[in-house]
Length: 61
Image (cartoon, rainbow, N blue to C red; front, side):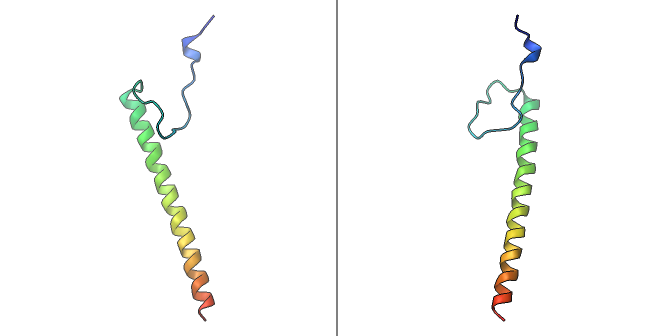
């Protein structure tokens, strides 16, 4: 009736989610995913700062 292989793992990571049943490999995978997300967020901040600086310099003329 129930198939253990059909159990789906969460696709993403939620802050505060239980991690005590995860394997070392699963934890390392999540760390990699979170590091990649940090890089993406830092790039977005950089792009916004650049846009802001360009706009400020335009209006200072």
